[in-house]
Amino acid sequence: MKFMMLLPALLLLALGCPAHAASSVEEAAPAGLAPLRLAAPFVPQALPLLHAGESEAFRKAGATAAFTFWRSPEQLRALVANGQADAAVTALPTAAVLARRGVPCRVLAAYAAPLWLVGPTHLAHDGEPPADTFRRLLENAVLLPFGPGNMPELALRMLAAQAGIDCTPRHCGSAMEALNLLRLGQGSVALLPEPSASIATADGEFAQLLDLRDVWATAFPEHPDMAAACLVAVGPAAHDPSLRALLRQSFAQGMRQMADAPESVLAAAAERHMEFNVIRERVPDGGAALLRSASLLTGERGKKAVLFVLQQLHELSPSSVGGALPADDFWDMGHDG
Image (cartoon, rainbow, N blue to C red; front, side, top):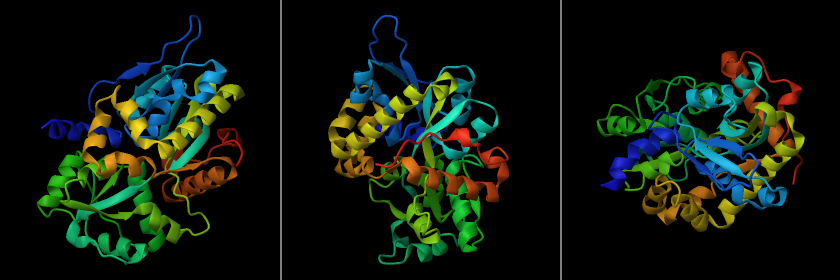
């Protein structure tokens, strides 16, 4: 029963849609030292920010952190506009638009995370090349449980355009609604990020049919990293090189810890936010594979991946990136290795 009550909110949070009021966790801070204010949606890559105050990088710098879940893109924009965030995990188009609107915004790191086409198990064809699976699954309407112009839809449209496929999206109000429409036969597949995809397929009724990252690597072999989201420094923090380096280093350490010790990372997160308990209880292997599923992108490799995605977005829909590609001061992704 607890799972059924939490699932709608979890799926909405993972998609960056409103659920309930924002929540925050603040680490104890020495007197006179303001904590860095960090924000992320309910995705696995929120965990490095949630635990940033305990990271080796923050401890060495004597820094502290306050964490907030953002529940919608509108809330994130409000946090930034009101000077209530120093760094955030967000979709690439959002970061580009913020920069184009004159908001101090620097990309510090990016990542490529799973983005699943989910549907009935009979649609799974073992051994089928990703490009063929993609073409087959797009023969009917794809259910999109988020508003037009969000990054999952843009990724789908970029890949469809590259393959010369007519994509027929059908927007619906939530991931739960998308799953119900699949049950009624009113859609072929639904497009879900993590952890929504793993939660939705945990009971075996639906299957994760295709990760769009596999299609991307086939469609763009010279640019195989499907960077869809990033860590940005905003406001005064975007102008401070030492803070930017600290934030990037802490995020990288957090991503490595997720891969090395996913069980302990999730357990610590669940003590602060009950949403993470659902991942531990409902996702196979307690969510360990889920926490290891994203690829961190920094340095020249990261910049190359992010820039290519933004170029593709600009060709597809210039307004999605604010009308033009970001300026040179958009980038501070450190060095490779």
